[in-house]
Length: 227
Image 1: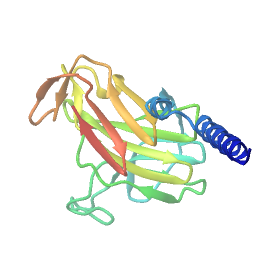
Image 2: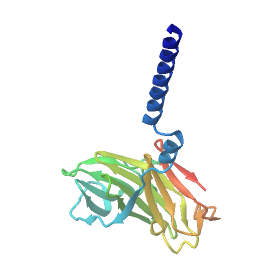
Image 3: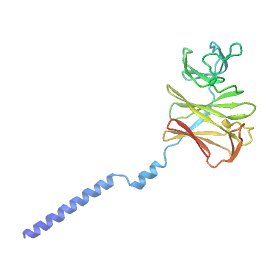
Image 4: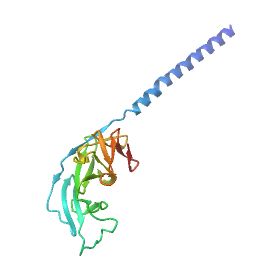
């Protein structure tokens, strides 16, 4: 009789342990399911928009080309004028020419980009999304020909330079900003191009390539190129 009681007790305890294990397993997601979810992050699309042009922005020693109002900021492009043909402060021999200035509501400079040299075109294109407050500005640059763009990010009070995209449409009669697509996912910003063929290092090496997923990705505080 005692043996039967012991046997039934052992069986009962085994069944309890089995149910406990089943409950723990069912409470956790399946490994495969978790992997699938991570492979499908939410994509955030950026769309180009027109920022309001403004006038009457005067900065001492700075020759202004374009001025736009962007939320609480004023987006100004131009260059510091040489004096008697010589570079003056804040320009240097290695940091001069067309540049971006961001002003606050009191017209004080809160951000100044590096100088991009004596280029003919430094044209701002504005992109934003509906999910967060981030705004990306891509400046189309050119001499006699289009030669890529310079990208900046405004994220609330944080303003930063993302980097240069040394790429253009294959025939150079259409600026890169017209084929540019911007998406964000997993804290990475993806710059892709809606064209079958592209031109790398335009104006210098002119390397023609097929567009097989060519892109720039801003990740870990760096703009990386993938082709």
